[in-house]
Every structure is written in structure tokens, then in C-alpha cells.
Image (cartoon, rainbow, N blue to C red; front, side, top):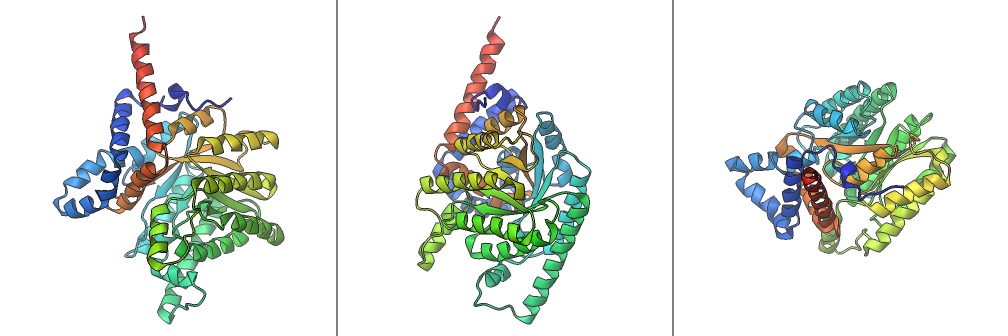
Amino acid sequence: MLNFSDTQIAFRSKSTNELKRAYWLFKLIGWQWLTKVSPILLKLFMPLKFPIFIVKHSVFKHFCGGQHREDCNKSINKLAESNIKTILDYSVEHNTENHQSTFNEAFLLIEKAKNNPHIPFVVFKMTGFINFDILCKKNNPNNTLNQEEEIYFTKAIYQINELCKKALKANIPIFFDAEESWIQDAIDVIVIQLMCQYNKKTSLIYNTIQLYRKNQLDALKKIIDLGKTEKFYVGLKLVRGAYVEKENERATKLNYESPIHNTKKNCDTDFNLALELCIKNIEHLAICCGSHNEYSTILLTKLMKKHNILPNDTRIYFSQLLGMSDHISFNLAAKGYNVAKYMPYAPIKEILPYLIRRAQENTSIAGQTSRELSLITQELKRRKASKNRP
């Protein structure tokens, strides 16, 4: 039976000093005023250089694998000792200057995963490959690209296909992460086309479904039905979502109905219904449950048992972010379930938007920071008692 309160298993890969550092980090993250003003402070003090040093030795060290893919090897191997795999995430978002560099990194990342059994997937954001404004245009059926934009878009799609061909040859599945709702429809069209082309024998290409959006349960049903009709295997990463404040602020500013559920309960309901739907159709798909929610995680294990699916069935993975919810990741892995940690890496200046969002996410998710703190405190007390025991 799963016991997410077993802190000895949850934190066995961390030294006491690492736990103490994590404790104070989550304490700081818990200060809502600090996470709200942090983007302003970073922008203000960035020319003075010293914020880089502070970030590098605090949030970056806790939530990231390094600045370069090879910097991540130590963390990858450390997780592997506990039967936890790694999803390397080159966390460069909304890259408007040099998409070619992101493509180059993506090809190298697939090569690295091909030669490392501890890296079962790679993950990319479409905005790392295609200009955000062009995706906005593609998202609106009333807009058309001009000739220059069309040439650019066609070239990007060609390179994405070359990337998928390399992944197919290496047998390394690709996750395409979800992004803002006002570009997501365009991303969905691209990824579903890739699924049709490359998922004939297995789920190689995965799309991400954000269940905090009101219409995504219906979208999930449609993509599963399309896979059955067009005879391709569907690949799905299920998440709740990470742009709540940004989505609601834009909806208010532009005076349209927010695409986000009005209550957390409705979001949770859709997420859990999505898990049930996927397991019922597991012969046609593969899923990665990207969740820090204990109830949803346990529900999926129960659904697997109900449908006679073994814990190590490669069609089902559980995933949490590096530095978060170790009590879920390590206890699942100890019971033989497939677990992979998202491990972001990138130069510190480029990964700052990701780090700020992680801090804000911990603050906005009810109980997330307090849960992390209580488990760390519990483990520190357990170690102290064990050390003092005769």
C-alpha cells in the first residue's frame, strides 16, 4: 500500500544539509509578497549581476539540473539509484531570437537520451521552435500569415518533422508541453498531425492536456476517438495547468470568459475523469500523469489495479517536477511504478521565467508549500531522533 508520509523513502537521496536548504527555500517561497515582486526585483537588479549568484545557489540549485545538459548527469544518476527516471527539459520559453539554437539543442538531447536508459522521454515547448506571434496568428482562423511568415512557418514545421524522425529512429518519445490558451489550438493542430504521422506503431509523440481549462475533457475524448478512427496511438501528458493567473488576467483585460475552471474542485473532477477515460482506452494510448496531487496519484494506481495493469507497464508514467513532491515520486518508485522527474536545464538568465513560475505555482496551489515544509520537518526530526537513539 502506498504511504506518501514515509519520509525516510521520500528523502533518502538528500543529505541533511540539503534538506535544511530545501526547508528555508520553501519558507521563502511561502511568502506571497516575495514571489509577486520577485520578477520586478530581478529585472531591477539584473545589471548588477549579484541576483544571478543568489538564484544559482537557491531556487536554481533546487529545481534545476544545471545550465547545460551534461551538468545534469549527476542528478540523473542519483535519481536512477531510487528507480526514478529523468525527463530533460531545455527550459527556454518564448525564444524570439534564435530558434535554430533550440532546434540544435533538441537534436543533441535526443542523442543523449538514446544513449542513456535513465532518460525515457524528451520534452519541448513549441515556442522554443516557432515564434509566439506566429502561433497566435495560426491560433485564429480569421488570420493568415504573410509570405515571409509562411516561409518561416513551413521551415519550422520541416525541422520539427526532422526532429520527430530522429526520435523515431532512436525510439525516444517526445512530449510537447502545453502553453497559453491563445496559442494552444495552433499547437494542438501541429502535434496531432505529428501523432497521425509518427504514432503508427507506438505512442512516440505526446500532446499535453491542461485540465484546468473548461473544454479539455471534451478535447481529450475527441483526440482518443480520432486516434481510433485514423489508426494511430495517442500519446498524452495530463496536467492541471501552470498559467492560472496569466490566463485569468488576460481574460479580464480583454473582456472574455476565462478558459480556466472557476473552482479547483471542477479542475480536480475533470483531471480525475480524464485519468479514468485514459485507462479505459489504454489499448489505444499511453499516458504520463503529471501531477503533484496525492488523491489523483492514488486514484490512478487504483484504476491500474482495477484494470489488471501492472505497475511497470510502460504505457503509464507518473511524473513530478524536480525539487517538488518527492514524497510522491520516491514512494511510487519504491512500489515499482514508472516515475520520471522533470529536470529543467538552461543558462540561468534564460530559465528565470520557469523558476518564477515554479515559485508562484507553489504559492498558489493550496497547501503545496505547507505540505513540502511539514514533510521536510518530519524527516529532519526523524533523523535527529535516529541519531540520538542509543
